[in-house]
Image (cartoon, rainbow, N blue to C red; front, side):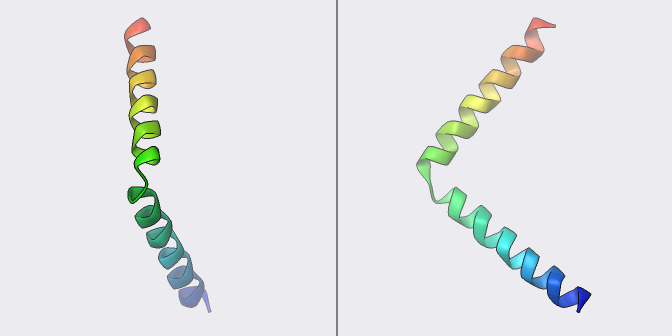
Length: 44
């Protein structure tokens, strides 16, 4: 049963990541977050 739950969870994660990678808005948000983190790191 544990292996089945792991397999289901893994497939769900794979599907979610694939869905996000197909969305241009996701990449725009990701780039904005990266820039925000970089700005915070340079302030220290």
